Length: 421
Ligand SMILES: Cc1cc2nc3c(=O)[nH]c(=O)nc-3n(C[C@H](O)[C@H](O)[C@H](O)COP(=O)(O)OP(=O)(O)OC[C@H]3O[C@@H](n4cnc5c(N)ncnc54)[C@H](O)[C@@H]3O)c2cc1C
Image (cartoon, rainbow, N blue to C red):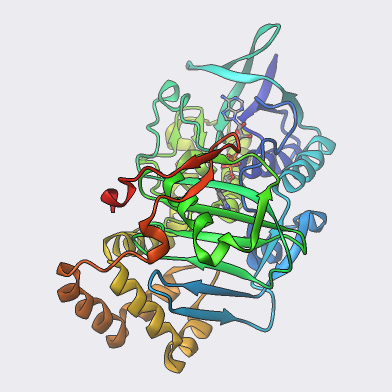
């Protein structure tokens, strides 16, 4: 079977690109290994308001508007960040992906659901993608293929492209809960080294709890669940616990002859938070521009597609670079420093700085302002001398917490998990 473009993966990146290409009249196939798009659900589903301003996205997937959050330090301090208008929206990710796919299918994209792409061969005339379901295999031929495979990087090498190399390990599950007014974030080296933990209320009955860390996330997840901050308020699990790696540094190259990477497959993810929906959409839009251009010139060579690489690096490269730096600073900072940073954010002048420059999807503005602030460096350098004195882990993090493993069974955090800090 021959197409103009074969897209592998029906997440936000693949579906968005498919919609654009099909609407432009290209013959598009989307190959998705799962029978139901968006399942299994693993993502929290927060998308900044900017995504809805920039793109025509399905509002039916939105579960609630988000305008505030409280950030907790590992040593007990907290700071509340709040705005008058929604800064982001919580979505049902499965519904979001399905609605994008429906739209692309309506424009003419062919969906191969329940088919896994197993091999790619690039030759001077074609990209050939071999896909398999339970009954056998089929080879789809196309001018080019777009790898939107999320955190699965098995196919990259077959196109001559390398996979991203830096990752956060993330776990999340949904739990029963009572009224929960707003998002709670938990930071600290002993809580979630290199990133953060979260409790995101879905409605009056449910909360999504998760952590992303450098290293293995499950022990930190279990300890967060067992912490006084959550133990009393979180009920039984409503979903299995899902575990997944998120790339937090871009792939060295995203374009080869007749092949491109997009979304998590290209490492187009916010390095500090692991958030990738907005970047996936934005970069998929740019990938679609390059492929539409390729279809008009007939040039799908690496050189012909390079405009995509330049465009996405121009669009989000600065945020990725600042985010990586900030993540390393966070991973390096001890609990005392992070506690002091949270304390700093309580001050009026910092609240004003955050209100002025924080942007859910463009992190570099906030970092530029922070890095210009003597108070910020004061806190970090005071922490530098304090780093030699190891900060005490919060009392709740010191014990072996009980929690849930991948399948939802109760497990105990390894007693040596603090040694990893
Ligand atoms: C716990 C957790 C919470 C998160 N929360 C947020 C959040 O709140 N906000 C945010 O912006 N980001 C969040 N993210 C990140 C976000 O989920 C990803 O950045 C986003 O899903 C990337 O979209 P994508 O289309 O690139 O990949 P994906 O959504 O991962 O889609 C890839 C698709 O490709 C399919 N696939 C892979 N290999 C093959 C193959 N060989 N053949 C066929 N199909 C294949 C997969 O089945 C999948 O459907 C979170 C991530 C995790 C792990």
